[in-house]
Length: 249
Image (cartoon, rainbow, N blue to C red):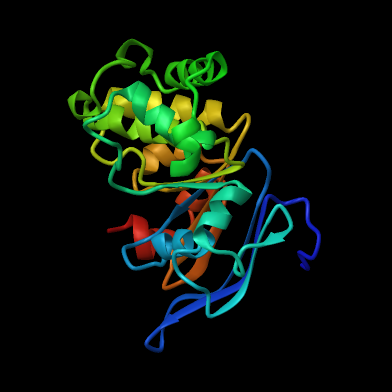
């Protein structure tokens, strides 16, 4: 399949990265549709986080292509990839704990991204409306003026998702968003991600297969930097190869 011009939001083709001769990602190709939640699973060391590093420009590809909205990302810097519309949330929440929920969302607002702009950044009605709408989506309306270090672990995860959402990325990449969450928080997060998918495309790395089944439109299973299996959560769960290398452990 040639992704010169494609309807896919993301088209990864022949992606390879070697570290000292070790191929962490090995000739990987996959395609993500608009408004799709693609979940990537696999054993430790399968190359899951490396794939996100490659897409967001944190790691440079040895070879291959990453097209986002038909734009080649492998030639762009990390900040330019963010500007193109790719947002990423890492495994550990990185919120500003000494700021309130409101201030965390405000600082993430697109117009306040550079120091020069932030000096002239006005807290106008539109900014406040966006912040309040985002807080409502991430279940933090009641906690807008609470300092972030007083939030539960799950609430900090939601706040970080909100900090991404307010930037309006077309593609969100989330690394284990429900790690360390309570059962109730996991259920709420599943509902949140399904809601977000109405307007955004997502790639999610996850281990919790019950959560995967709740959110995934399609699952890609990685093993040793290659695709072991791909398909619906049900299909992947019953795949003998997947059971052998991943689910059986």
